[in-house]
Length: 410
Length: 230
Image 1 (tube, rainbow over the protein chains, first blue to last red):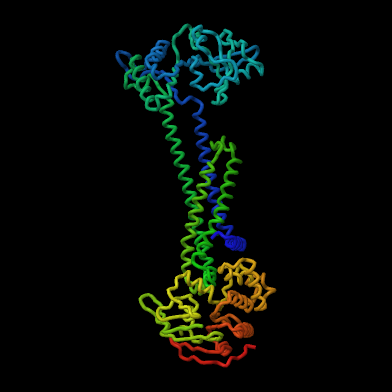
Image 2 (image 1 turned 90 degrees about the vertical axis):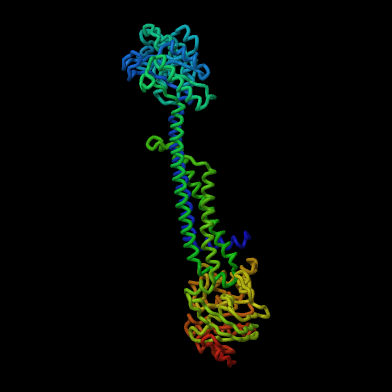
């Protein structure tokens, strides 16, 4: 079946029927090309989407406070709820089982200067475990540590762009910057993947911030990272218990949806996962649709090719071709053409995706579109198989047709 | 060479059946040049198709060179056709994208002959029909007579026992017809058994025997004093 003579016969047929070969090859190559590009774009869209959420640690909960909206236990509505040091201590001892790290975040902004340079930056009073929550990467020096908190040191950690703005290329470590009428020692410089704004932040020990803010014990937000091993279910249970506990502690109506707010990466993660899977469905749908169109295209071409060759096949039968050799010839030719052009389409598609790279990131949110080679090859194989199948039916009919009938029309 | 006994053939046309051949008894000896004549609808083409194993018989027996032709499936018929028979058609039926030489090699390809050998053999037969110089030409570059001679070369290349020709001059002018018939007579003189279906008296008179069919039976079967084509 795969003798050299058979191949020579097929190559000759292909060479002498260039238009026909081109048409069927083009259909397949175009089908695969479109499939690869669309699928790749879908993946690129997902890449962009995933990048948005990569910045913060996944096992994090944010506690914010606000004003109540319902009166409760003698308290009026619209009461301002604030977290303080005691809340922090109580939460961390009560929920020790769940908690990996806990830190307040006191946010404000202020003017900070060094020598003649000064600028407005957002400043955050935080604890040591904040580094993990924000996935802050230290470039040099260290982060805020426990001693800074205990001794209320005026040490700060500045973002990469803060150092760039203020020190103009000089090393900022060990130097003193001024802010709020005091001087602060720079102990570390960090970078962050979250973008430019994330690198224009100054971190200080929250206890020091409390001290200079008229010795308040308010802590602003509370950020908790829970132990990852408690899993999604544990995180949800923890979140519910935490909400109940704080509402009780702060005398907030259990039905009041305001007062405190808990945002957890766990519940967001679920939404993200759902969104990602919807995207996946859309990508798959587009992919299957394209493939289907390709299959229909190649089937049409095959029917047309066999019809066009009916007379030739009749002649071949009259001079001694067996039905098997007729079917074999048509299939082998079809598979050969689809395979070659399928892989041409595949590689043009992949080359195109590589060429796109991140050119479409800004406007169309498509980052580094790609397709797994295995997906591409699978799609090509599917098209080849269906192309062969689509060729087989008319080939079989053509092989069964009597030579006289095939030769009659002339 | 050919022995046919009590051959019947009918075609189903919807609910009706059309009885085309109604008991043909017919023998051909080796080396005969037989013209099968008849008006359209007489059954002459059907007879040729059955002889050529392009169609199946309903009733009767058909022996070709002592081999009973029966229980033919498609594959067996294809092999017999390839081995025993050569066909020449009215409309030449050359494959239009293959050169004259490639067309002639095709039956040998289906016999599994290797490429070199079949090209050498095919060239030999093209030479015999006087078209050696046209070997690399496509059918579209050949005249009608040339096409028919290529078809004859293709039919002869497997050295068949019988050559079957269906109105082989039907698409040719009278001069070209004579040329082609000259070639047929030459081949016959070399001992080949040839059957020609025709409705032209001129052509029939160039054969050694004339069989006349009418309404599915043989009306007349007589020896003929062969007239040379040219």
